[in-house]
Amino acid sequence: MTSFPDVPAFTGFNKPSRVEADVQDLNLRGTIPPELDGAFYRVQPEHQFPPKLGNDIAFNGDGMISMFRFKDGKVDYRQRWAKTDKWKLENAAGRAVFGAYRNPLTDDEEVKGKIRGTANTNAYIHGGRLYALKEDSPALVMDPASLETFGYTDFDGKMRGETFSAHPKTDPVTGNLCSFGYASKGVLTRDMTYYEIDRDGNLLFDIWFETPYYCMMHDFAITPDYALFTVMGMTSNWDRLKAGKPHFGFDTSLPSYLAVVPRKAGTSAEDIRWFTGPSCFTAHVMNAFQDGTKIHLDLPVAANNMMPFFPDINDAPFDPVAGATYLTRWTVDMAQNAEEYQSQRLSDMIGEFPRYDDRYCGQNYRYGWLVVIDPSQPVELKGGSAGGWVMNTLGMVDHQTGKEQKWWCGPVSSIQEPCFIPRSPDAAEGDGWIVMVCNRLEERGSELLLFEATNIEQGPIATIDIPVRLRFGLHGNWANAMDVPALEAA
Ligand code: V55
Ligand code: FE
Image (cartoon, rainbow, N blue to C red):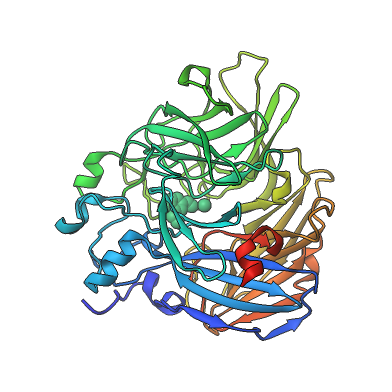
């Protein structure tokens, strides 16, 4: 097979790109603050070969990592494949030998039992190491300067589960990398693990427990004392995989849960408190914090499924209105015996891909940013939508004043997840910049935009031309050069 299918996921703006690149001193308009010294890493799914089964979802593409190195007012660009075991096996075969998303029954016989991960969801720096992450597999370690792939890690044999989340968090108090895995004992298992890893890469302890039912456990939150997990009706089972259905399907009959897990070695399943709520959809979290005995968790919540490619299990048609996500605060009081979490909407913007100033992870915080779908703006998808969703606006919330800001990217463009960069390590919360990819659909090109973080409505202060079209991307992170020895040495 030599050609990609003639479907929206692989045509127009989404035509395969598959480009590794090294370009020094990108063309730009505006000014890059000279004190910016570090790199913005981000990842996009990009199928190395046409999908084995003819068509595929973006979430099953191979990870392609971009690095934008900011220094002395200039930006250098590097892009490399995350060379997973899957990537290497397929590269050697010259074609796709792994099949559908999270369905090992669709793989070629000779790769049965191999790690299926694509490393396509997050590019995360901790302890000077770069991890390329996909939630169905271990963490892939890469060189943060050359973007060469080292391979999967099991943290010196201490990671006993099979999976590592794409959404780890760095606790600003301890410096530990806090992460988890689900389907920890294999595909579709209800087993979960929570892990903490110190700055030197030592896995300190794990906590094992089971969820009430198997579900997509995409993100989580931490506070100084707790790890918080949301369970919602995006579920699966072997019958679905045997029937060749999409891995996940949304079951509106399932209640949602909020699990509160004490973040300490020796915690057992009985120490975990499970709060319930009505059926809803959650994926990412913004942040969480403790206030006395109360715990607040801020996250986009939709009344029903927001992912059309993982359809309703009873084939109910996708409902974009019920699938709209709104930033919401879930609250529990650990001093009370309530069985349910309380829920309060924080914003009327339709928003996902929530971010904040990561130095406030787990702490009471003021500012959040997110990708907003603003239906009041005109849309002209010349060249095709870049993600399937019309992500046309950058939004900001100020939890202290309740004020919001928006910046619209125009009718023929779409944006990707924003990332906050502090002006200096000890700058006040929100004092810094937002860096964000913007796709110009008609020009079939991409830009990297830099904003003053608390004044996004004035528009970008710098626009950097990316010489390669960047496709639909997931998550990215900023790292100061001083925190990444390999960058300083390069
Ligand atoms: C998500 C993304 C994934 C995935 C599971 O946004 C969940 C949610 C890019 O891959 O595999
Ligand atoms: Fe994510």
